[in-house]
Every structure is written in C-alpha cells, then in structure tokens.
Amino acid sequence: MLKNTAYLVFGAMIRALDATDPDTGDHHRLEDECTGIVETMIRELHDVLDPIVTTVQAGLPTDHRDLLHHEYDRWTGNRSWQLINAGDPCGT
Image (cartoon, rainbow, N blue to C red; front, top):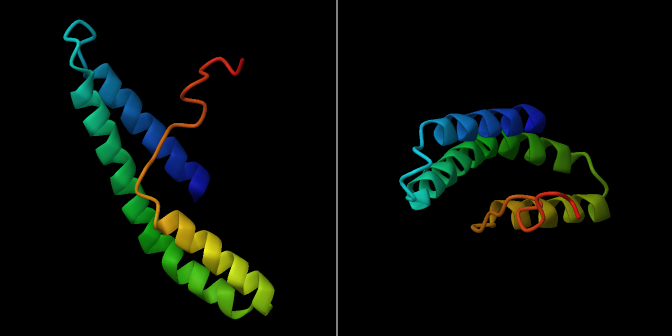
C-alpha cells in the first residue's frame, strides 16, 4: 500500500512537472501543486491506515502497542514534508 501510494505521488508529480513551462521561472506554482498532491495522498492514507493501526494495536503487547501508537501519532501529526535527499540529489 505505501509503495503503491509513493508510486502514485511520484507519477502525479511527474505529470505536474511535465505541465510546467521551464522558462516561466514560476516554480512556486509547481511546488504548491506538488504539496497538494502529497497532502491529498496523505489524507487518503489516513483513511486506510487508521482502522488498520487500531486493529493491530489491539493485538500487541503493551510496550509494542505504545510504540506503534507513539510513532503513528508522530506521523499523523506531521505538517511539514520534505523530499528525502532533497539537499543531496546525488547521494554524495
């Protein structure tokens, strides 16, 4: 599910980039569009993951349940998204 969603986000971002005139210099519109794509996908993931996480938590030992709850809450509370390796595109 997560891999499929990442693929969908990547594809939507490529389409947005393809629809952007590279000569305009208006990269804010592209950034806004990509942000919207990510936010939409995250909302859709919440709808799918919330009941799954709730079900899984019920069957976990307390320490694992607490860890899952903490990490899932941290992820769902995130309002700042940054591309992985955005500052280092070549992995150098």
